[in-house]
Amino acid sequence: MSKKTAPKPQVTKKPVRKPVPKPTRKPVPKPAKKPPAVRAGVHPGAFCSPEGAYGTTSKGTPMRCTSRGRDQARWRSA
Image (cartoon, rainbow, N blue to C red):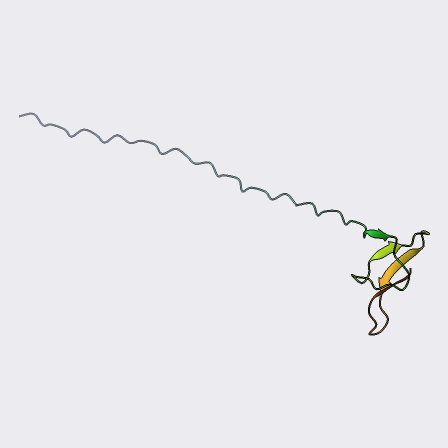
């Protein structure tokens, strides 16, 4: 009687996985700071908002919105 040999299991090689490089984060550029908007045609002593804003009179005099003590903010010369 001849001995039947069981078929040898086929060994398949698993594909070697190459390490996937981690995505590098590029620094997000910060938006450039805009110079504060300058309002044209402001009137000295008039109430204003927001405090710290800049403006110019009709003659071109630079003004800034500021408050003194507990006073409400007003346009004053810069």
